[in-house]
Amino acid sequence: MAEPLLSVRGLCVDYLGPQGPVRALDGVSFELRAGEVLGVAGESGSGKSTLAQALLRILPAPGVITGGEVRFEGRDLLRLDEAALREVRWQRISMVFQSAMDSLNPVLTVGAQLADTLRAHRRVSGREARQRSAALLELVGIPADRLGAFPHQLSGGMRQRVGIAVALALEPRLVILDEPTTALDVIVEREILQRLLELRRRLGFAVVFITHDLARMLQISDRVAVFYAAQLVELGPAAALRAEARHPYTRALLSAFPSVHGPPGERTGIPGAPPSLLHPPDGCRFHPRCPLAEDACRSGEPPRLAALG
Ligand code: ATP
Ligand code: MG
Image 1 (cartoon, rainbow, N blue to C red):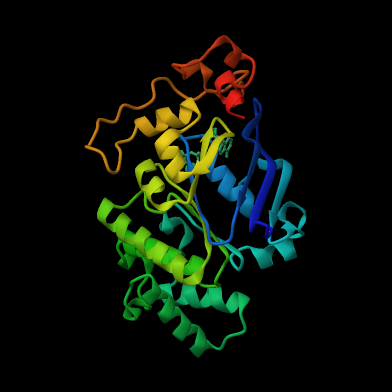
Image 2: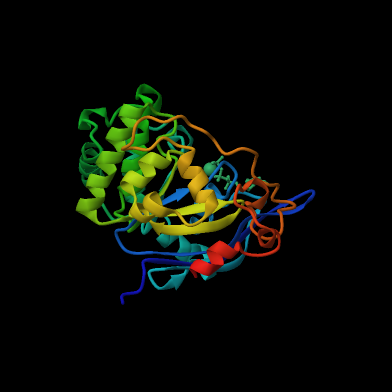
């Protein structure tokens, strides 16, 4: 079998706080194939953004990667020096942040930002950069005559699409989206995601897609990774997870959201709160909130999960 595009093994990240290290990613392992869409789900604080930032090695202090391996196109990103890493960042792996306001420069026009991205990494003339910038804008459904607009002159949805255009400018093989549409209304969200998936079909990049919207995630992902308290607790094809999730946390998470196809249900939510990562519980970290917890779950892997192999 061909080597996966991305292979993450035992990835650990700690935030070095005054009360001691907070392990925000604990031994995370998964693979991603070329062109695949991986959804990342989990409650607030479960480590989703930490994962996105660790993959690109853009963790803000005091976050540090304390273990593991991130192989991308055959190289361990954790062992690359800064110069080699710069070649990977944005060119091979790019990222769209939750708020494009955070990633776009407020004093540069949209066209200047796209052109700067292109010229920083590619030998193109000013004219070529302008032409390509116009094409990129049109790719995400914005008329090229908006090249001269400043970010504040665009709507939230347009800004987010500009963020996607910047992320696609260098034709990366992997695009990481961290809640790219959370701030938008559902119609704009649907339009942006449809366009992104259409582009993926045409350009063939893989996607890591982080969102709180589990229904939407199940719709658009090939596979879904579920995080709970810094650990990856379940990973499987979206269809299989929807039909029969193995981990009680995944089931709780799924039943906490209305189904896409079924009748509009009530959002039940999961009673209780995730544990403190300073002192996570032993055994299965979900056991204090789990309706199915048995004694064995307090010290080790839940027997019913172990039995499934
Ligand atoms: P959300 O859905 O709210 O965006 P998330 O799953 O993206 O949450 P992360 O932002 O990855 O969660 O945070 C994971 C954990 O790491 C959190 O529980 C938080 O306590 C801790 N953490 C994140 N950033 C820092 C920081 N700068 N300093 C200390 N701890 C941090
Ligand atoms: Mg986050």
